[in-house]
Length: 154
Ligand code: 4NP
Image (cartoon, helix red, strand yellow):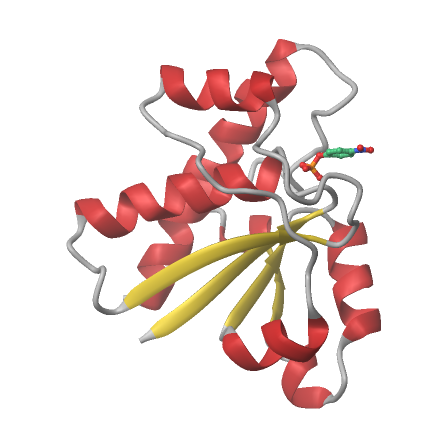
């Protein structure tokens, strides 16, 4: 069993979407017994909240139900519990690396778009202060990168 954790800043837009997109792929391929995923944020601003309404609506239009509740990344627990810890942008990766306790932790940290198949984007941009197209772009990039991640793990 491999455990994957998706990480962004607030855990209300990008990483809960990554979790929903990847869960849908896991279910589609019947890999529930081999792969599991969760999400967290490097900042605690939105702890306890559901995903952003705009992100949930964009997800629903594509058949993704974003059900996760925001939580903060917990280095003491998450570095031990997860095999892959995947940041949405380079700042997320830097923040995660600054929390790593040792080389074993550091080796678990990856950038989401490094799994991208199309390689059109080099990060999942923060959609929070932008318009609707930002949320659609997040899903476009995540669908591509989650497919690449699944392929790598298979
Ligand atoms: P996320 O988006 O990191 O994809 O969840 C954001 C959510 C909230 C904020 C920034 C980014 N914020 O500044 O509150």
